[in-house]
Amino acid sequence: NIGAIAILPEGWKLAPKDRLPKSLKKEMKGLSWSAYSKEKPYILVAGPVPGEMYEKMILPILAPDPAKDDKVEFGKETFYFGGNRGRGQVYPEGNKSNNNQFFAEADGTIKAIDGLKVTIQKTDGTSIEQTVLPGADLVVTVGEEVRKDEPITTNPNVGGFGQAEKEVILQDMNRVYAFCALSFSIFLSQLSFVLKKKQFEKVQLAEGF
Image 1: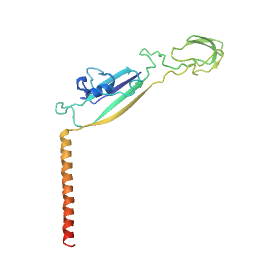
Image 2: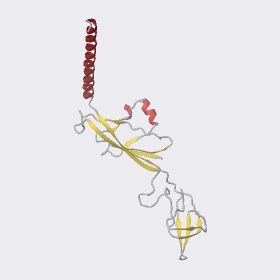
Image 3: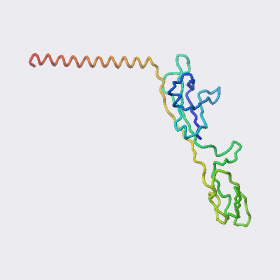
Image 4: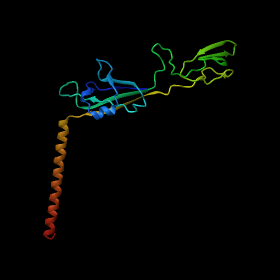
């Protein structure tokens, strides 16, 4: 399974479902995002969901309008994303989950293996019983010598956590229109200059220069 978290700048939020186009809904494959809390709607979480189905997780967001929110300004904003595959290795109580690799607790010889219980006879003759959890396979056999902290099971944890940050520019459309108008006026002036130059060259040729 996989899960994800997205931390948006304040004022940005999850886009309502009724504003999503059908093509985007189809691409999202039913993926559901939700706000972390009512107090912090700009923190969004998703999952756990099957990793094979959701190799790409699409997040539809709604940009704020600075004209309606005084706290929001046009400019560059930073978004933070985190993704997790697999599940936790430690429960909230602090005990290990079965998503762990287990290690020998002492030097000695494997005396007995009873299901998930491994008995290690230490060098001083005493024995300790160590319980491993389901999920990993034992890699030791009875009679085998082990060293303390040597792995006695495989490692079932194939997950991991990744994070990234991206920048988005919230642009004022009036600035975009002004830029387009300025670019068009520069284009017209350059075109006029080129045409005048061509006309001047034709006149010179006609006069024999």
